[in-house]
Each structure stands twice: as structure tokens, then as C-alpha cells.
Image 1 (cartoon, rainbow, N blue to C red):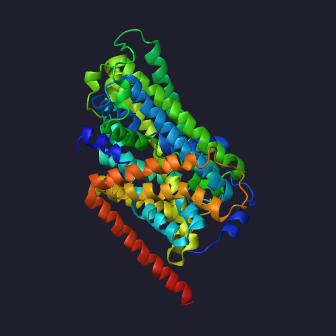
Image 2: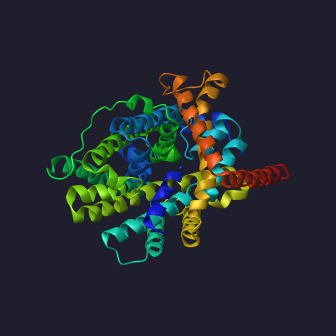
Length: 459
């Protein structure tokens, strides 16, 4: 697979128990993830490859700088809407598991199980495989002599081993690599501003800029921008391991999303300001082109290293998040009890190793792109249902404690839900067969859930 093809795939990128039981979990002692580490979890899950690949397609469909930057601002606002909603939910129900946990508590266990089933089968493993392959390709740009698939496999294996360590150790690992990623991005921005030569495009309003906001191409571009923002809910997957989750989880979700929004807007402003637009036009390797234009022949290699190193924290965050979904399913579903087994460090080692094995299988069969296409709609619907759960719980459980409350309610969840539904409809129209395969996956999940319920009744 060529680099251009691989990078273009980034546009396709995220039983039992009661609410009263969850409330009781709030009083458990702290687990070891600090606020900075939880914030890094959000940042690590958000900043992947998409922000470095999309501007070349945006200049083709939205040929003006300010409307393009507005895309990234709107994407940040919509992601903040989602983060506000998750902040209210996880502060009410601070247990790890992400949408699996939130949906089973807000609606019904079967809804949560189906969301978790998608995550278990491919929802995390396929994006991890994609990120690992991107790492291999960008390492090649930097000059690595090794085969891309071998490097991708090795990286998945190393991160899986790291994920078998204690929670504090994993938090430190993720924090270090996330800080390195952010520092390198900031260094690129500062260097681009300070470097005097090369292209300096003017940022001026053009006649017709306002009309661009109402064109279908603008809405489609926003869909792709939202892919780059996926991961803003990262800390929700490890809520049960965060110190003082009622206080720190909302802050981590909001701080992480705000930091990434600022970085996204500024780094795209640099791409648009310092790079000839014609050179980036319809090219997914826009960041490499921009770095080469600004810093010379070594610029592209340095950008390749930046992105490759940044993908390490992205993968670590996804392995951590995905394994906790699997672990929580194992704790709740008798048929999947083996997923909850932990090692001496407290890590769900079966869940981690299963996820790594699936990711490596996707790498070597070359199927991760197809899998991503068919699970994307399901993942979007899960996050949409979770956000709408804020409204549902305000109606059905108005007196439940809410340490954090969504501002501008109900506008905030409705804005996010509207955008997500638009994305689901768009993807469903573009990838009909993959969408049908997604429904088939849900059907298999229903069968598994039914078998588990039958097993409980026959005991």
C-alpha cells in the first residue's frame, strides 16, 4: 500500500449492574491516574495522523484560508460539546469502560453490550493497526531500513507489553510520549514563524468566503475534520482508574480537548501560511510537503519523525482504553469472564493481549481499512447515544447527583448529536456494504448477549 493510500484511510477514523451500584463506586479510593495523565490520555487519543493529512483536500473544496480555519474551530466547538456531555456522565458514573458502561447505565445493559461488542471485535484493534502501519510508513520517510509491516507489528507488541504494567507506570509512559508529541508540534509552529525565507501566503478575506460555509463541500470537509478530533472522550474509558474522578475527569476531558483545538487551528494556519497551496492540493502528505517548503530537504524527514513518534502515544492510549472496555465486559458478562483476568500489576492481561493479537492480524491481512469503514458508523452511533444520554437521564433521573452539569443544556448535546447523525448518514451512503456488515456485527453481538442471559437464567 502506498503512503498516499494509507494516509487517505485516516479519514475513516474512533449484563447486569445498576445505576445505584455505579454511584457506590464513587467512594472507592484513588487508583493512580493524575489529572495531567488523564489529560494526556485525551490528547494522545486525539492527535493522530488526520490533522497532518487533511489540509490538502480542504484547499481543493474550500479554497480560502479563513473558512478552512473556521472548519477546525467548528470541529473544536463540536468536540467540546461532546466532552461537556461525557463530563457530566462520567462524573455521575465514574467507572471505566467508555460507551459500554455509559450506555448500559443510561439505557439498558443490551445497548451497552452492543457498543462494547463493537469495541471488542474491531473498534479499537483496527484503528491501532492503522496507526501502526502509519508509524511504519513515516519511519520509512525518516529513513528506517525495516519493513513497514514488521515495524508496525513490533510497535504493537511493545505497547502491549508496556500496557501490562501498573496504572501509574502506564500513565507516566503515556504522559512522556504525549508531551514529546506536543513539544514537537509547538517546535514546528515556532520554527515556521521564526524562519524568514520561503512562502508567506496572505490571510485575507475574499469575496464569496461567506457563501462557502453553506456549500455541501463545506459540510463534507467538516466530516473529515471531525475524524481528526475523534478521541476527545479518551479519559472516559479509564474513569475508574483516575484519582478523584468526579473532579478530575471533567477537567481532563475539557483541558485535553481545548489544548488539541488550539494546536489544530494553529498548525493548520501554519500549513496554509507557509506552503504553496498548489503543492499540497489533494495530497495527503501535506504536512511533509509543508515541512520541506519551510525547512528544506530535511524538513520532510523531521516531520515524518514527529508524526511517527506522536503515533506511539496515540496507540498507547487506544490500547489502554480498548483493554478497559474489554475488561469491564468481562466483569459483567459471564461468557466473557476471562477478559477480566488481571496480572500481578493489576492490568487486564487477557484483554490487552487479545486486542494486540487482533491488531497484528489486521496488519498482516491488510483488512484494517475495510474493518474501519464498517465499524465507523457503529462507533459514531455509540457516542451519539451517550451524548443523548445526558438528556435521557435528566428526564428519567432528575434527582441523581451531578457533580458536573453540561453548560448551555440542551443546546450542547443537540448540536453534537446533529453533527454525528449527519456523519452517520454520510458514511452510510458512501459505504453501504460496510454499513450492512456493521449491522451484521450487531446481530452477532445480540446472539452472544442472549446466550449470556440464558446462562444466567439456567444457574
